[in-house]
Length: 81
Image (cartoon, rainbow, N blue to C red; front, top):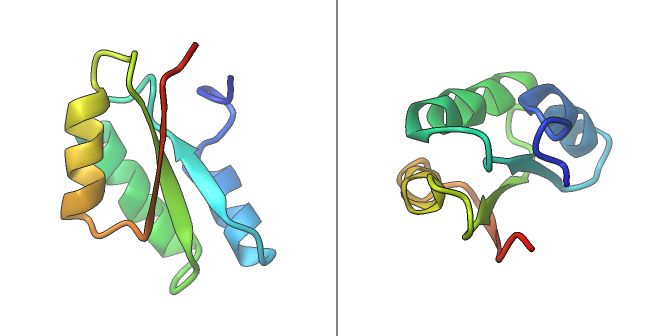
């Protein structure tokens, strides 16, 4: 999938271009997800973006909680198969 491609820089670039960038959180832990969300907001201030929560990944629950805590406007939930 997009786990190693959909980084904060790509998400911000897509959002800044008028699309909806989605951060891949599969390989991230909660703290990495939080830092990535903050980085997206630095690179694309005021632009919409989302976070992907892949349920089969070990950190899915923690990453979804971080996205909710950070008030991410879109959370895309997938199974990951």
